[in-house]
Amino acid sequence: MTAEVTRIEIADELAGLFTNGAVSKHDMLIAAVGARPEVREVLSALPDRRYTELRQVWEDLPRVPVGA
Image (cartoon, rainbow, N blue to C red; front, side):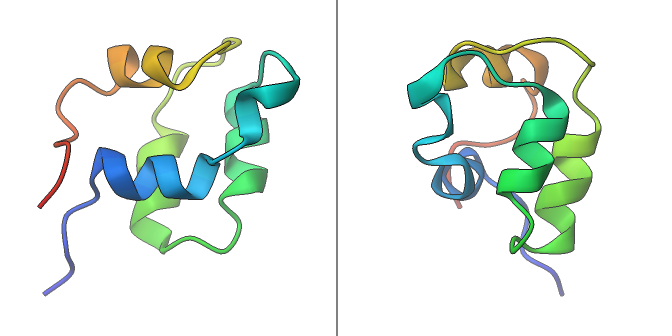
């Protein structure tokens, strides 16, 4: 059984990505290239917009749990 994707796992994959300004969904998918396919699938569901901080990602992914 595949473990559910959590905010902690996503945050680990995107660590440091927001330090140079706003990023897109595409930027996040590139940063998560080594992540589990399930993580990339969750990130793929994000709308196409600019994110200036990780907190905005959670606004668009409210059902992703914090941790397991």
